[in-house]
Length: 259
Image: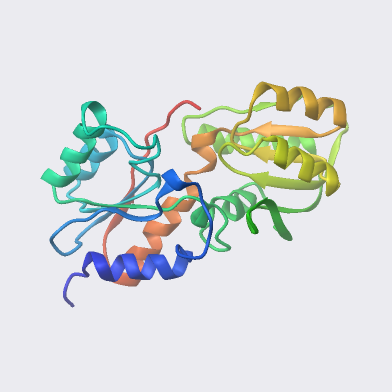
């Protein structure tokens, strides 16, 4: 079997993730962000693009890198400094870069949100965190002491160099209705949606300080499980899928941010 081309893999991912259909922020620029010239021989995946991540891909001889937060996340910028160094590393080593943001967050099988729910022992029953008609997160029902859910989140985050914060949890409190929105999931929109939907426990990556104040006064518990940690699952699952579909070796580059 001949090694697959970038076009073959990108076409597969674009269709699988519905890149052309799902809305996102302009700087996400989902899909191929940087092309390469040769056939794909090894796949790497990471949450964020950085020089350290690219160097690890080079050392492992990977020439297809999947990330959740792509090279253009900071917006329009001059090709100099750190941005230049990242781009030069990719081009010099013929590494293609593919980014998948919201289409990956909410994907039903490889998405960050449904996979985090499963990792915490929760079963998704519906969507949550609506963005222009697309549900980014998931929600469901349970009968779990909230402190137990917090302990599960702590164990998960610890595996990825992170930590967990939470609004104060009363002894004996039980989570009946939960919702998950990974990454920067605590916002005015998700808190309002949680209140309207009867959610009592919201699990996110991170959020502004005021969300903890508002949540406490409205009876909502928020578990902040780490932006980085909560978004490691999707890219890993996506790399595994490509490895199986195209018979390619793959690996995950763990590069925690501390957030």
